[in-house]
Length: 77
Image (cartoon, rainbow, N blue to C red; front, side, top):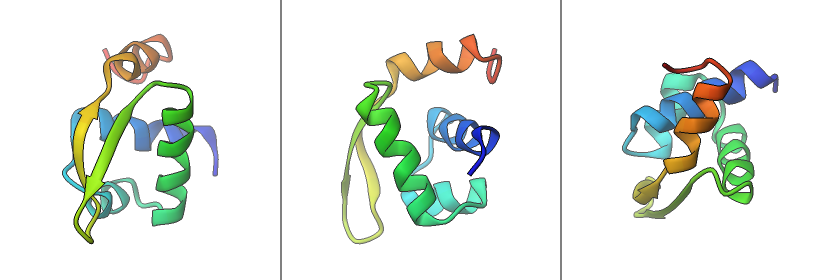
């Protein structure tokens, strides 16, 4: 996966999506790819979230640092 696709996943996550299914559909990536990107962002403490239900609905999302990261890389304004 290239960096642009990873940044697109993070951008979609930042702007809000309800579930992993919605994220993978919008970003056109596999669930494994999206999970890896979010795991790496979590490891860097850019985001935090938990999931609930079988469809992996995002819950308790925190993305304070993600906005600064995306602005720094001119992904969002």
